[in-house]
Length: 407
Image 1: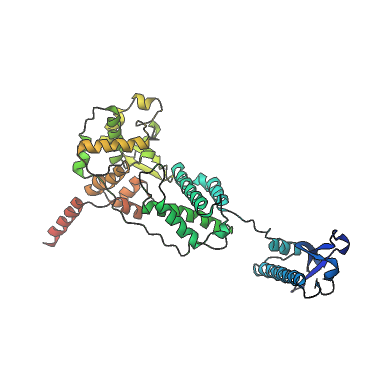
Image 2: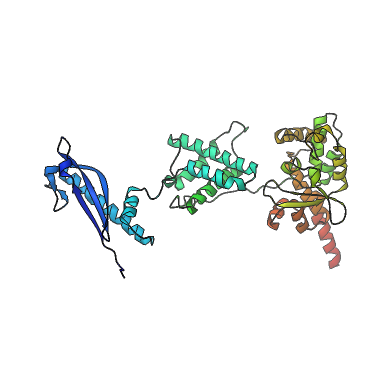
C-alpha cells in the first residue's frame, strides 16, 4: 500500500511553435504519482536561449535573469499549493494543484456576493422589516466603498480591520437624506453589527480566510427606555381629540399600552385572532411579526371597548382588521401632537406604549416578570428585563412591605 506520493515539476517549451520573433511560451508540467497536467505560463523565452536540460534560460543577461527569477517564483508557488492541499488532508491530484496555483479552486467572492446570498437564502427567515434594515446597512456599505475606494464593490479577501474602522468613521459623518441629523452611535453600531453577521456568514462558508472584526469592540451607549407614568397615560386616555386622525392614533396607542402589542403586529390583527381563552374570556392569540414568537394576551376591559368601537367601522371593515390601519411614519408624527395636547414633555413614540405596558400597566401592578415576558412574546427573560423597568412607585411599595416585615 502506497504511503507517499511522487511529485515533480518540469518546465519546457515547444520550440517548433515559436512565433516570428523566435519566442515560445514556457509550460509547467505537474506530475503526481505518474499523472500529469500542463500549465501554460505567462512568460515567453527565445528558443535559442532555452536550456532544456537545466529547464532555465541560458546565460546571465538581464533577460535571462528575469525569466529564471519568474520560473523560481512559479515553482515555489506550485510547491506551496501542493503543500497546502496536503495540509488540508485532500486527495491531491495534478489538476487540483493546478487549480490551486491558478486560484480557480476557490472562487473570489465580493461583498455584493455575500449581500445577495444573505438576502436570498437568509431573507426568508427574517421579518420583512428586519430584512429592510439589512438592505439599508448594505446601502451604506456600498456608499462607503464608492467614496473611500472609488469602486462599485470590494473583494471579501481585501476586508481588514482598517476597513471596519473606516466604515464606522464614514457612518458617524454620513447624513442620510431621510434623517434630520447624523446617524446616532447605537444606530452606527447596529449597521456594523449587521455587516459583521454577513461577513461571519461568509467566513463560515469559507469565502474569506480571516475575520476582519476580531479586534473590533462595539461601543453601545446605555439608554433609559422611556415609558408613560400612570398620570401621563391617564391624560391620553381622557383626551377627546376633535380631529378624527388624532382620535384613531390615540386609540391605537392606548390599545398597545394595554396589550403590549407592537404597531407592526396590531395592524395585522384580524377577527380570527380573537379566541376564547382557558378562562372562557376573549384573548388575542397571534405571532410576532419580528421573530415569529407566539403571544397570548387576555383582553383588559379597555381593549375590549376599543375593539367594539371599531367593529364594523369603515376603516376596519374593508380590510377585515381589528383596528384601523395607518402608516407608522404618520402615526409617530401625530403622536407628537397628542403629547402637546396632553402636556407631555417626553418624546412620545408608538413603541413607548410597549414599554408602558411592561412597566406602568403590568409590573407596577404586581404582575410577575415571567408573566410579562410571555405576554410580550419574548423567548428570554433577559429581554423582558430590558423593557420592563420597575418604576419608583413599585419600588416604594415593595420596600414598604419589607419595612413592615422587619418591624
